[in-house]
Length: 218
Image (cartoon, rainbow, N blue to C red; front, side, top):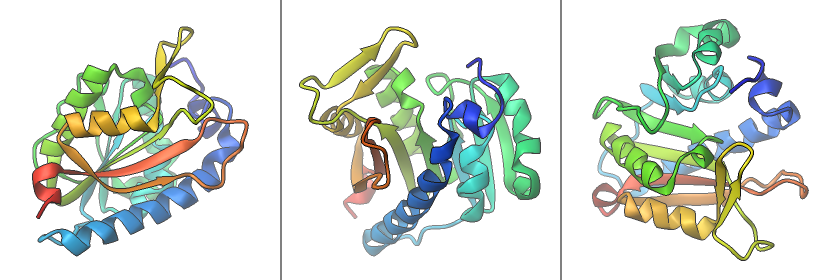
């Protein structure tokens, strides 16, 4: 990504959405973990999270570092990743490992994370790469951990389940297709919610908290 290493840059010129995005993400994170704790035999822990497609660490600084002791970052652009430590500033003590890799190539350590948060990046994955990535994420969770996907989705104005952007090779999916991909990866939805404070001129944003199926059934 040839974008400036700033919040406005990594958000494609929409830096103004950062406060409302973070506020609703924080509430969703807390609600999903509380919901999962009702049925999980293991209490959720707050030791280590992964920020997937992290850019300069916007989500790490403004969200994850306030809920987890350490946060690892994975980002395919080395230039953005290099900017993360300075960007985190006073939250830098929560910075964990930095991995320069695309999501389709990233192989997280099994049983490492209490939370894996992936936002505004899976549009660059094919369906098959998306499924495979989610399966690796599921294996990377510690007991009681969850995978979070936050992404733009198609709304009822679109009759198809997929919208391709030839300019940046991205694909925006319908909520129905997203759920199909989750099921194909062996993940169940613990909680699902749309971003409420959002412009009608922009595609809606869907937040999903996911747990491995065999664990979600416990």
